[in-house]
Amino acid sequence: MTEEMQALTEQGLAKALAYIETTESFVVEQAPLLIQELLNYSLVYSSFWAVFWFIMGLGGIFFGVKVYRWIDKDGGDPFAGVMLGFFVGGGCLGGAFTCLATVVKILIAPRLFLIQRLGDLV
Image (cartoon, rainbow, N blue to C red):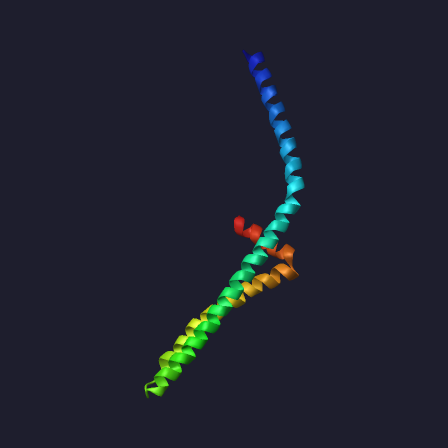
């Protein structure tokens, strides 16, 4: 019985080692492509959201100015329009600048970006 177990163990180890050797070459070949795709995807993703939040921020400021003029024309207190433009527009522009900072980080320091992404996975 022990000889059979030893033979099965040796066969299992041989299969495991063969599998590890084949996957090791796959990982080595595919790692640069994976890193390039991650950088490209992150660049496009962050660029899209930067443009989106920038447009929304400008729309919020524009809407705040419209509300300000509408309330001021009627003789009311235009404070609501100022606050609407400040908070909605400012919040959206804050999101745009955050996404823009990610785009700049990817373009200037891609290795730093990858290290931070790997840190997020852990």
